[in-house]
Image (cartoon, rainbow, N blue to C red; front, side, top):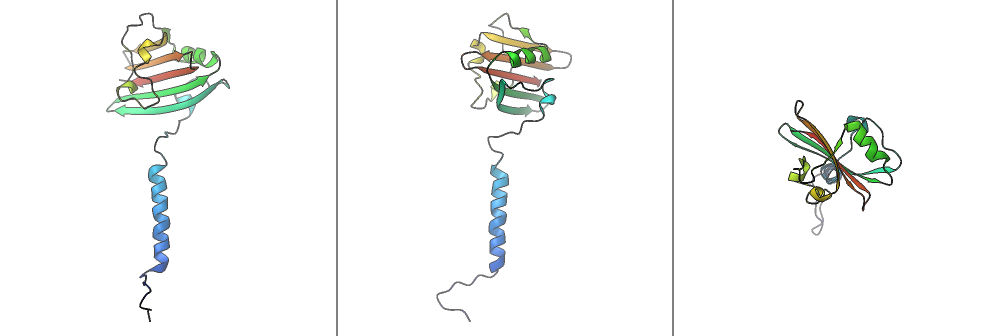
Length: 153
């Protein structure tokens, strides 16, 4: 018989399971926010990162068939910059007023310097009209950062 001041649970054992299931669901929903797992480097780069380069940010954006992969690396020397230039067959951008080839800058994440890219003095790029692909590299020597983007339009 129940005491008058005591609340009776219909399924006392099940309430613990529901609580645990809720925690698991919440963790699954919120754990990927702000963090996108970096795929194997071989998908984007022919070489592995040297010890002097550290990946800070990575993001993939897609709109229809257009896709962009953006990366930010902290570097302590020119090795990784030189390797990206070689792997992606980039050329120096001679005309600093040339329109940027960037998709991620349309809806940039907080870590992507969309407005500053045009003014960065060291820029490299390549685009291939036949495959509708592009590769871009911006070097921020003051902050020792490389901003890289490759994609398909």
